Image (cartoon, rainbow, N blue to C red; front, side, top):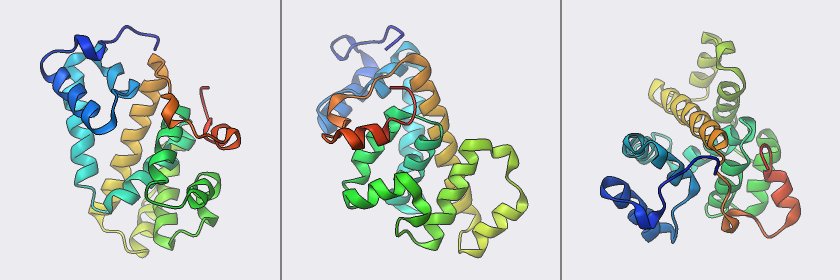
Length: 192
């Protein structure tokens, strides 16, 4: 980490509650969480927004994670690619998660999921190039305006988070690194 952050043993108040919850669920406080402690006033709103967005996501947790995974690839964020590869492997086969990261268009996803991920990719690469025609294509495969807004929010939020994590030097925790060196290399899309 490039900046000084609050260690779990030194956290107090709402920060300590967030750290404690992460310790209870994951066995550690991630650097991605800890890096917000340099701005403690931001930690609670950021965590609340993430949970509200993810928990109320109109397309379900798998699709939220797929969007996050693809946005991380194109940011590019090694940190988030490693973390979300690990989370994908809990919901999909390892082989499919690898195929999605390599080329989601040819990874056995539904037409709707491919359209969703193409939109997330375009948001990440250059959202200024999105037009009404792009949105109409999403509607034609069955997405509602709520779904489209959720996809845009999830991809944009991942862009924000991933860029911040890289900017302050968050490093991927060793238990998120795959045992296979080739997989680790494939997920290392950005800062190493």
